[in-house]
Each structure stands twice: as C-alpha cells, then as structure tokens.
Length: 70
Image 1: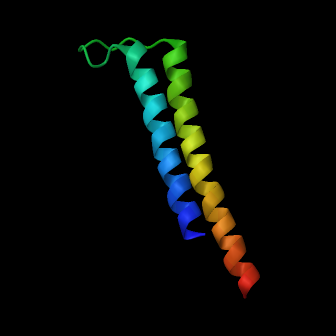
Image 2: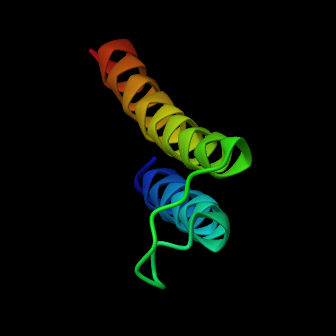
C-alpha cells in the first residue's frame, strides 16, 4: 500500500503541475499581465480537482485497508 500511495501522490503532483503550466500559458501572468481566459481557468480547476481526488482516493483506500485488517 505504501508504494501505491507514493506513486499516486507523485502522479497527483505531476497532474497538478501539468494543468498549472497549461493554465499559465494562456494567462500571461509570467509576462506581468493578468489576463484570464475560460480555458485557463478550466485547466487550473481540473488540475486542482484531479490531484485532490487522487490524493483522497488513496487516503480512503488506506483507511479501508487498515480497518479491514483489524
């Protein structure tokens, strides 16, 4: 279970990083301008949702497996 937890958490960080990078491409925040477009917000929200859901699913599986062992 520990290896699964490490792999899923690493994948969650990668997913969040990719979606954050995709959202930064359209926002022009790095150039000093703050311009938001709907697709940039979509990718940012998708990255946050997917990474949190991956992390929480591992936590739930971990809690269920420890409860089953008792």
